[in-house]
Length: 345
Ligand code: SF4
Ligand code: SF4
Image (cartoon, rainbow, N blue to C red; front, side):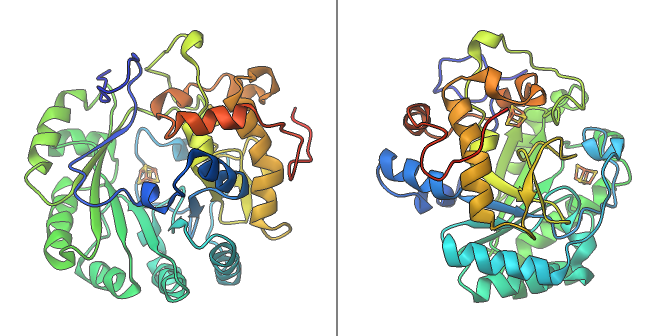
């Protein structure tokens, strides 16, 4: 497995972004001092993933969806708008992703554009989606521009038809490439475009060609090691336990399924542990009372306090923590102090 981050003395292969041609939005939204970043993170994360719909038109080989142990559906509009209102009232700095598991453009008729527009009209600074790009036709691009979308990530994972169509089952390489080039033409600098490459055994030989091709386009390139989705897929990067550190996925976002459930972390695609449901509790209470104690346990390296699936999950090794000093501040925090009033397992 290639190691992308040459600034760290670690054998781990973290996710990385190349061709960063626009500001790092998340860094810009953060307060200035580590203490302030820590205090804000105790209150709420920088990102919310809102699963507009969990349906998808592809059946990718590296996607946990293939195992199908959860029900799929679309988020009711009233619930989506209520969550958007709540989040923007309490945490106006957030980036909202209008997707989670599933393909957001499947749900364009189910309200994707309307939800983005609604949030932008209420002051959302950064609206983002992650898409497989197969449904990104001219009409979709124009509607996304009208809605006010700021960022789009497009999962490709290949630079040839053969590799693409053997990984992204149901997708057509030529269609996706045409769609991205049309998007670049129509969107100009109004939407920040990122093409994504998830590293797998099947596509490793195309990584350098992928980077070279896209380096000539006005796009960012996001490369990430294979995620196992909590051991749902075979692990290909086995770091020794001695290297284990706090999991950046847990610190990064709060994630809401179409039915309102908040799973353990972004990788907990089937909801092995649900922290709560935003129909019944405020999203801020779920973060502060249910999730922050686990941030503390991760930061302190207190692995016995984690649920079994998190203790044995290798996906922490795919993402670098954004701020080690903030992790240290969490390690010194009493998980049962302040807002946190629940017992860890
Ligand atoms: S497009 Fe995304 S959500 Fe759909 S199967 Fe592929 S990886 Fe999974
Ligand atoms: S290590 Fe734990 S927090 Fe990180 S992705 Fe796995 S289950 Fe989630």
